Length: 230
Image (cartoon, rainbow, N blue to C red; front, side, top):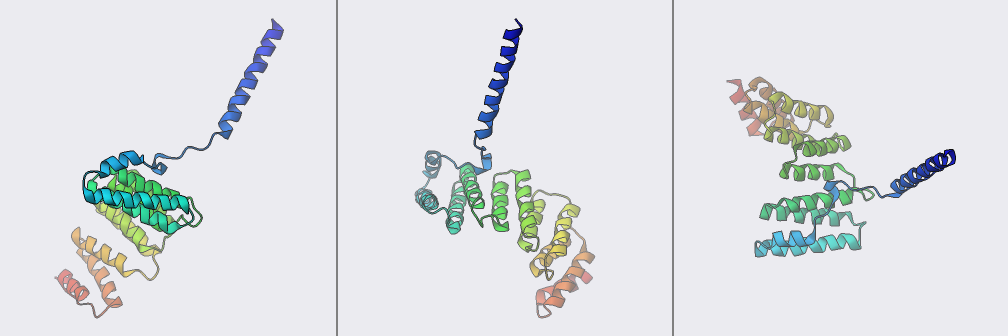
């Protein structure tokens, strides 16, 4: 009886060890964001109009170019833009999902991880209605390029689209002003326009004064200062 018990324990250990080894060698599964869509599905969705059918062939050929030369980072950009355009033409989310997966492929290549790619991922996730993902991607873009005003503007605009509170939106603008070198004109102007929109006129006026100091020949800045001074 005792020998059978010991043998059973030993067998159980071997089974568990074997299972552990099997788990260890299994490849890491990709996230849903990284999974390319089935071409048969995409082709059927593109069949709605001759224009979208033509665009589908172009996008599929661009994917083939990626497979033939995976080191060409420009090919990923071209393909993702084509798939995104198909999404805009047809309103079908599968095209946005495929475009997002193509960008993830590029990110995995040497030199492919950059702020621009994460901003594009944020834009595609926004179009897909995936709020948390969109914000995460925009934040990753800011993390990679904290001095890039476009990353801050994109997140602030998305917060506005989501109707977040003025304090939350303004916090993004202010974060950008702290990080962006030379206090970028585009970022200041976006913030000034938003301040005006939400009725924070004094703060908006101060921003337009700052803009006017940077560009005294700009009549729009002068006019806004006068308007907000009334």
